[in-house]
Image 1 (cartoon, helix red, strand yellow):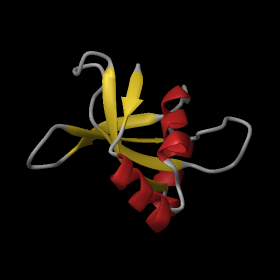
Image 2: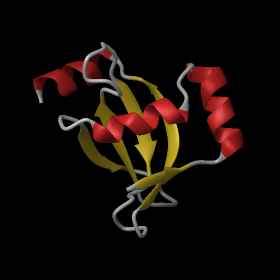
Image 3: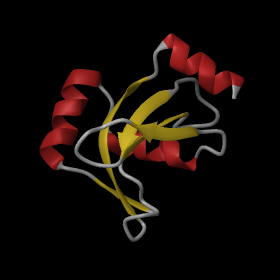
Image 4: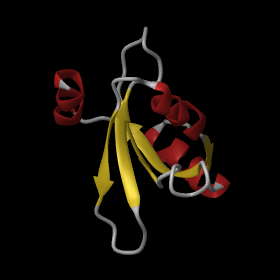
Length: 93
């Protein structure tokens, strides 16, 4: 599975949320990540909550397209730190 993103969007996300899309990409390697569909009127989107590094604290919330339905390439749309409620949902599985 590979990930792509819009460079301008990635830069804007880094400025706004202080999270790079390169870091966000690591969430997809988390075996305990939670992925659910996101309601968006214009395209099929998903969100994933997970840890970019298993041995470090920090849970991210990443919005993306489905890599499996797009020939193995997904697009990261946004990434931010998970809220306390999102982090709790992740930790409780």
